[in-house]
Length: 511
Image (tube, rainbow, N blue to C red):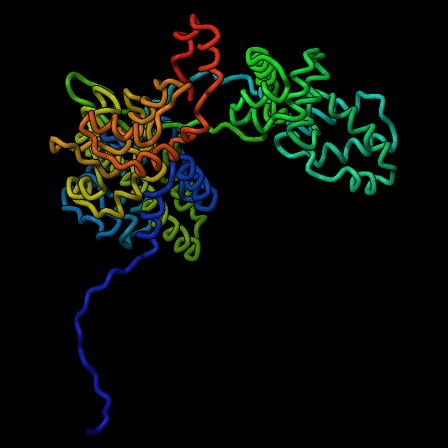
């Protein structure tokens, strides 16, 4: 058989990920804060983009939002963008400007300026920013400030700085004191003296080398006179952690009531003195959507507050009219114009897609909005994808890092997805509902005799929720609830035995 070269025509289809489509997909999965950052970065690099704060009508009295209605709802990032009819193109001349080569002067006609979605702007009195600190003082700052006010000087102050610099977030010294003395060039006795001074700084107990030392420092500082308290901390902390009070009473020769009183004192000490000065910042969630009840129906509205509203800058039109733009600059501006108009279209479509998906979700979860978490229905991505006519991966992108404010609280959109567990009568119950029920059962248990996982499974079975013991254990761990042996409080049983009138006040446990 002879080998030969020949041409052959073959027809095939393939998905081409254009830069514009990649940008649209990226914007779709960004969180609210990430979207704002992306828009600001684009404004800095694209001279054609400008920000508007007031509602700016276009030709014919339509706002940018009204003109953008021609997009006909949401789009699917995994499919081709929808084509527009001629009537839609008349409503959206900015799209023609972005995707087609046109005359330069026609791009800047007054009736072709577009903003994404304009809103009325309300002047608000802003807070005085002089009253805000850019950074809250940390543990090291607090201790160094006290070190400067102390009488320590020279080599002793240097040792104190080294000790403070080697504390962990809980306030414990995890470095050998001999190493600190060697680095400072002093003897170990001097380092011990400085360490004792630092340990009595505020918060008391910092720079301790273990929990026992931390508690003993606080006992000395607060002048707790009960010798049993010191004895328990010195020798029986491991029994106390496991609520094993009978062995402590037997070893110390004390009555159980005395042991319980001493334990009560110890539990009021702070085992992590540096925790109050943690560097963790509180991040407040700003919802992307609001669900409000109007009559008998629920309405989903977008929260666009804080998102810059874009428009095409009129500066370049004026520059063109004055003849300040040459041929090379014209080509550059045309490219930036296409990038700007595609960005505006992608943001608008992103917002409409999020709203459409959220509306679909809460059409399934109306009982949850009315009655709470115990009426949450099992839902999967495929259910919403089929309802709105999109791909499951698009639904996943839309619901990632998006939050919604509902009558039942603020939730991530991902929260409403999860497989259900079958009940005996054929109905399904969501896994979130089962977790909440497990949490309630444990909250209401007798802390002297807490439920084990098998007993919790039996309680759920009486409510027609068939669930295995290992599944209960898995959900309990996800909720951060300790096992039965760690939740058991034998001291409560001892209190009831010695003081029966305290029974009612100790019947409820606390997670």
